[in-house]
Image (cartoon, rainbow over all chains, first blue to last red; front, side, top):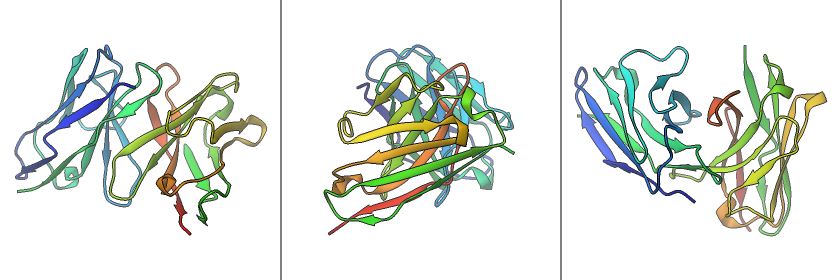
Length: 107
Length: 119
């Protein structure tokens, strides 16, 4: 199984500031990497797939980059509705795996 | 609109069995592979299983292999997860999710159903 790690575990950011979240894969997953947002009591929501493609309806302030083993999710200017947990997910190889998540909270 | 609705979650004793269901609507269910993903209380997401659109291919997480079976009935737009010999560590919210048509990530999620394994 490909081990996915994320850093930091918690990121405290003020509204309007930029947030940069990292995800690392234990081996190359090429660009087969997705990012999800999850709020308490809700199902995950797809933000980014193929490492850098925004899903339908996702605001342009969300962007993804990277390939191979190192990936980044950037939120350019945090809005109140963006405070949530963000998880990366590799779908390059069975069994699929998720990172442990980064919680973005209000500074 | 595209929707997935899970059901079947319950409180069950260790060693017993349980079947979860997921009904899809608003899209051509038979065209899409489908996943189950779970989330233990206070923990991250864990991929459980996937089934191809034609049911010929199925893959499982090592943690559930041999105890859990994924299946589908395209005539009913239904996805199932048969859980046998459940363990305390199977306690989680179980989500069904649609697989992207081209890639394999999950692009639509249900609201989840809760399974609690406790004596």
